[in-house]
Length: 284
Length: 183
Image 1 (tube, rainbow over the protein chains, first blue to last red):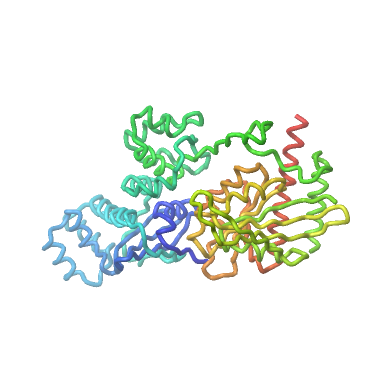
Image 2 (image 1 turned 90 degrees about the horizontal axis):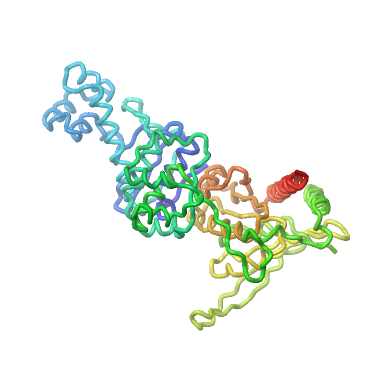
């Protein structure tokens, strides 16, 4: 089944959230209006690899040079002398020769992947498609990265006020921590401001209240909450709507279950109606 | 004659009319209505179609299926339509990701109208571009207890399945009410 669309309709955070929650394996490709193409690969919902443009151009030598671990000359020599070798083999050679450590390689590759992903957060428009089970060539070094932190950081970089306004139009709604069993609050890196917000999350506190307590602007509180929502850490608490004037007897703000017809007012009568409907529809 | 009512809602062109037409024993009745925009004092000439289907259960019971107009500017009619419903179906065109946000908005609006059970029908699952129902669940942020069902509105069997699952959810809700009443 296809998973494709336009970033106009789904932000990168929403897509990553979907991939994370559905534990998807495959490659997400996004092409923006400037014909730039980004690829992100995932295994069991974890980000493992990402690159811009053509996969073959994403050499380890270039990545290490970009990270300041190799000089331009070293990277060039490496690229020409070890042609045909995989990134894993090159990495092994570099470690043995004492140019870099294993930690240097892991950190550089990880940063390279994250740079690609964070760049995509800034794209407001672009066609995307997710190809299930398509993974990068085994010659590349892949590093599993939890998406929760990526989503949080990406959201921090998200500057589109309109999106935040649309996603969180009402600051008078409160929040609660998700009861999703796989939510991993411990693995998420939070800023001081985010911790301050987290500490006040409670169904009794609206977002506006939390913002006032922390002296945060409407934009700042939306940005923080949006990140937490997308990372699946918190959820909006549905608020009861105020009762309508025409329905003064309502206490919950919602209409009571519709009593469709007079005789169905008792639970037993309603059950009888529903059971008859089931029987009828089965027989259609 | 006792009348039970279900509402089929969803974004514009999500397949509501076809869905109702697949199981209705009468041709779907579309009512047209002209409206006037008071805010701008400009008379709108656009018409709105409200679909209506029927399934007779017996001499004393009939089920009416109401399809809401999908366009946002007619959402004032949703409240009226939702009155007295047993439950509702939210139709989503699985091949049109650009409508998912609107589907979510409609779903939340209807949730606010009445505390009746509902199901989400992931329509057009026979199309190559269709998003999987479980992906839609995440995108629409559905609660775990809300059913999202694969559907092809032209296929009577899948439409029946959606309606039956909604009715099962209503029964479960009745069970809960009864056990709460006993405690």
